[in-house]
Every structure is written in C-alpha cells, then in structure tokens.
Length: 193
Image 1 (cartoon, helix red, strand yellow):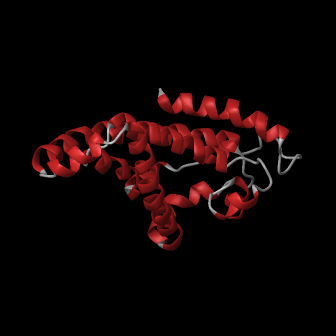
Image 2 (cartoon, rainbow, N blue to C red):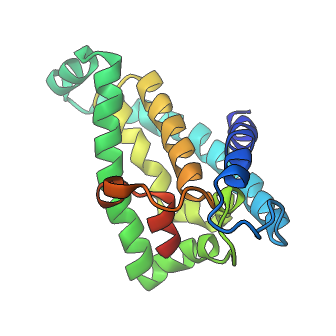
C-alpha cells in the first residue's frame, strides 16, 4: 500500500534528521499525540483510496466526451520530466489557493482544523488529516491533469514528491534556510503558519 510505504519512508528519513538537527531538542519523537496522528492518517488514506477508485468511472466518461485532443496531444508529447515540473507548478498554485481558502472560509476550516490541532509539530503531525477533508474536494485536483493529457506516471510521481515535501515541511528540522525561506515553504516558516 502506497500510503503505508509513504509513512514508513518519511518516518525512517525524517525522524533521524529531526534528532540530528532539531529545532526543539527537548521534543520527543513520540510525543503524546502520535497515536492520533497515525489514526487520522490511516482513516484518511483509506478514504483517499476509496475516492480514487470511485473516480475512475467518471474520469473515463469525461475523457470519452470532452473534445480537447489538441491540448491532450501537446501535453502528452512533453517529456515526462517536463510534465512533472508542469504538474508541480500547477498543483502548487492550486494548493496554495485551496489552502488559503481552508483558512479563510469557515466551512472549509472545519475540514482543515484537525490538521492544526497538534500541539507540537514533527513529521507525524503531517499525517494528522481529518477524514471529512475529502468532502472539501481537494483530492479532485489531480483528476483533470490526466484528462488534459499528463501521463498518469507523471501525476503519481508528482503526488509522491508532494507527499515527501509535505512531510518535510512538518518536521521539527532545520532552523532556517536563508534565502530559500523567501521562495519555499520551509519547516521554519511552516511552523509559524
């Protein structure tokens, strides 16, 4: 299961780094909330898998009925690495505005508030996602990418990179990254968020 492998990979990668380069050396890896983090993660990953499976039929129907062959041909002709870069830019832009809406719109905040309920930030807190967030529609972001011609492998590669990045910015790791703080969402500025 991709979601279980993701947790294992990120914990094996980031927990030692959090211990070597901690922002708060006194914070324990298994803080009192770690069980809630994992419970939220497993429940939400189950819903992701259910929703992903149930989107195949509508996706195939839409692909059969929309006429964007020229766009699909142009996008699918791009080399995979260019597709990944394009997807990263598109999804970063959309996720920024979606995340901003989660904080500004009271109805959407209800889906997102559980993510901010951890008292201390570390890599496990990244997985604190409520099961109701799937009703907000954020998971729909990746479906249109395949519709317009991006290779599913490029979409999944970008999703995997995105999950790794999201895990990294939730770590208690690396105090400041200099000029990168102005152009990237880093662990130190995400802690302020």
